[in-house]
Length: 287
Image: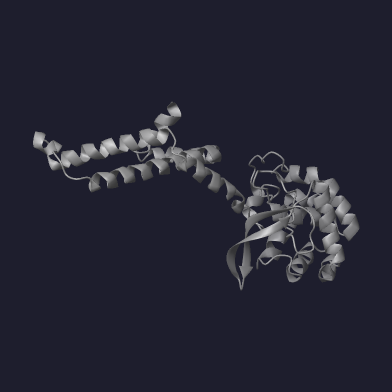
């Protein structure tokens, strides 16, 4: 009941929108449902208003001593109450809105998240690596070391690349049902990929301008599979040979990856260098 009262308050107290914003930070799913119900009620109210205006004029409250302004005020209040009463029972529109918007949640995943994301300490979603850089390194270090041995690179280079692409695990590409794809390197699913895939909206740069596109990415059964596939990709593709030649220089490694076309972000090498030289990876500098 309190939730319903708080929802109804949005119509009479604009400050209640602040409560909805706060709820969005604490409980995004709950806030999405509340916003969808609010939209449903507003739409119903507009429909009632249109229906009233289309009705044939008859005896009005003005004939009983009320002014025109008062009539409109009370009619508006009545329409609002009727709309919210009907919407509180559920018309089906709010549920469809929630369903559609929920499907678009992966769009918030950036393929190359800003470096600012690397310092966040928000708790990770279930099934993803811990968001704290130290925990990310601890959890994934064995997989990175295995891939590094294959590539002849320091483990911190592999971990740093995964950290950049996934925002230290916080922005891992996910399936529509929330399952992790374990794809920490943003590797796309080309024509030759025969494994599972997941589609998300990602940012690509064309002539230096950012564009939002829906792309298919590879999905794995585990993080071990993801790191092994990353190692195969870099080892088998000739264009990454210069990348593997820079195992002793983090900045040169980052530049070589950008020049090889691993990502379209014009600042990709700078972002990767910042991650590779971050405190979380400094302990692995001699790896």
